[in-house]
Image (cartoon, rainbow, N blue to C red; front, side):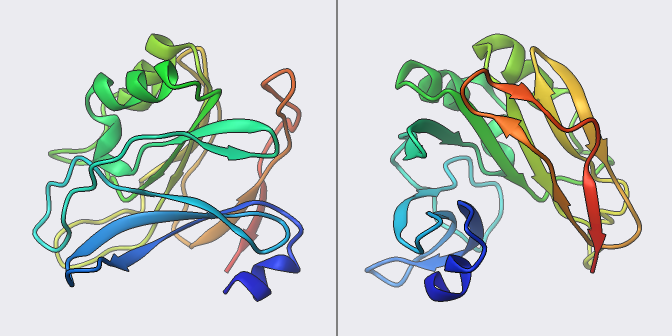
Length: 181
């Protein structure tokens, strides 16, 4: 995987199951730099499903001289994880999520974490549907100071790209570039 990602010349946050040393499964995000090197990983802390174990480490990961905090899905539900990442030096929060609208859908949690910490939050949410939840109206967003700057939802899976200035922590792109897949 690292060799393939090397061609992108970008840092990649790759969400996937991880098998622990004792055979337990984790919902994890691996951070791979533009040279294909593993910079670190974060395991989901706030486990609400029955297939994965809870991680126990909350640390920002340094990418391109910026400490990035990762909140996997329900990790953004309460303020403790975001605040912990902020206190440990995170300058931006990435929130890979599978959090669809509906009964237990998001109700401003990402915006609230941005307001509480003062950090930008980048949400990459899933689309599609499974046996229990429809994700077609799930939004991916770029949030700063509690305000969504960009948002996208669609009936088709897509790769969303945008430009962000890591020095000033400002959005450069006026919109997402969207490649439907």
